Length: 149
Image (cartoon, rainbow, N blue to C red; front, side, top):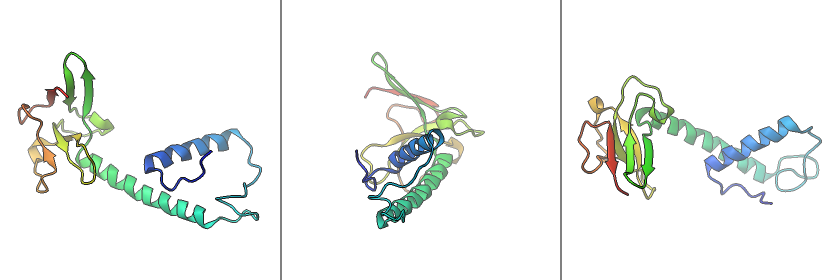
C-alpha cells in the first residue's frame, strides 16, 4: 500500500479524497493510525500539513482550470477506424453551457506535449499568445473538423 501521495496529480488526489469520503460514509470512525499522517498522540505530522497545503494548491489549480474552460470549453471528440478523428463544438460541449457554439481549435499549453481541442467563440477569436491553432484543412468557421491521426 502506498501512503506517499504528494507526488500525485491533483486529479489523482481528488479521486483519492472521493474514496475517503466513501469510506467515511460506510464505516464507523474509530481513531487515527500512527504513521505518516498522525503521530502516536493523534497529532498531525508535517507530512499531513504538506498534504493539506498541496490540496490548497490543487483547489487554486481547479479554479484556474474552470476559468479557462469557460473561456475555451473542451470540444466533443470521436474516433473510429474508418473515418479517423472528428472534433466538434456545440452550445454544451465540454459540459460548459453557453449561448454560442464555437469553432474547434488546438490549444497548446506550455509544458504539455500535445495540444487539446477547445471551442473558441469565432466572433471573439483573438489569441495574441499564439497558443491557438486551426486544424489543417478545416474551414475557419466550421463547427466540426475531421482528420486522420
